[in-house]
Length: 111
Image (cartoon, rainbow, N blue to C red):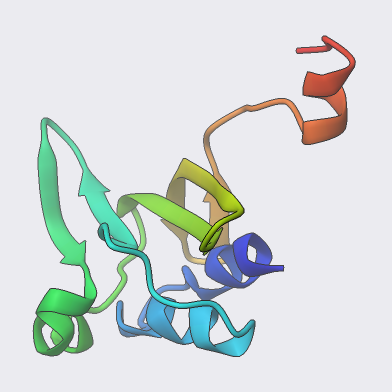
């Protein structure tokens, strides 16, 4: 559910800080790493992290922007699930660029 909300949030004109709201909407704590950052030749802007909440609120997602979006869910004493994929912001919404097997495919050895 978190991943779907994060991808839905990657729409042009939306404030980058809306990615924080995706975590809140599903009742998950914000992760200790950036929720997203720009992809380019390195660790590019915008850097969307709770430590830069005001900066994230001022950033707008633009068509053509490519972000590394992070879904991180954890429970103390149990463990964590971490997913980071490349997402392209388009006029129509978000397009996930990373091709990864689903958990069921991975368990079955299908790629």
